[in-house]
Image (tube, rainbow, N blue to C red; front, side):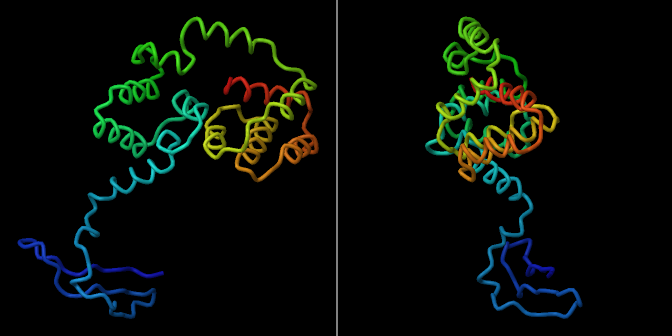
Length: 225
């Protein structure tokens, strides 16, 4: 492990002078091959740390990923997981860059859960209109039986998708063993690491009560319906 000491910077001119140095654990001193002319003073500016954090958050948020599914985008905006400061900064930066009020509205909704920030189109796209909410409630009130879920898993499972996999991790299913197994195996399926057969059989072989697994899967299914 090494500690790097940057070269000196003239505060008046901003010019880099001298050479960077590296100190190993035993404090022996080694000169770097790079000269002062090769080093960008901005690399040592702590103010850049938030910039890089924002870029990292932007790269990982599904709403910024090309080709992401509508389901994953909706799941992101409706998730209850608190956003990090870097994620908020990334979304705000997108708003500033585009001057698109839709982004600001969605961010306020994600932060507060208050649907009054959303316009009619956004409410509709997120499935939050009164009429659509009634339909969703009617469709999901009755939980699927274990047999129906088996048919659903084998016949209606979406193709593996990294964005959906990430969205699954945002769902709060509780801390039961059944919830953990269902969430984990569903995540592994959507990352492409497990087939439908593999995920289904591992769930059955987990030793957890099938009724509890069915309840947990129903919870996950409802979240995306």
